[in-house]
Image (cartoon, rainbow, N blue to C red; front, top):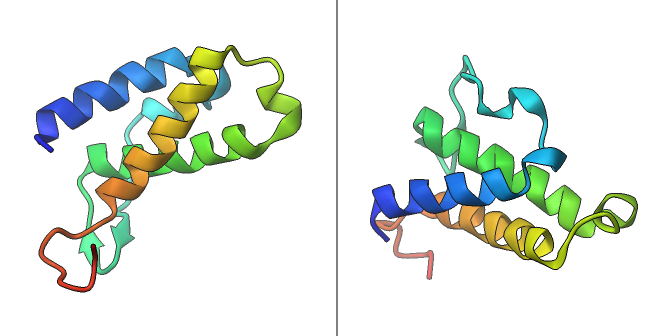
Length: 95
């Protein structure tokens, strides 16, 4: 997937669930994030962190009862996009 399309999609999703995400999530991170020995860019790291937040929101019953169906779908999509970012396309062990 084209990184520009991925970034725009993640931005739209995070906008959709902005009321449930921490305020400082979109601010500069200030440290490096590594997944599978791959250093992520700041945008990728923010996406992975947002993915973790979306996973918590998606599976947390007290919080997700106040979400619309569109917001629940956005959480699920953001969760999977964050996992997609963590996959190294050059690794033959990854599908």
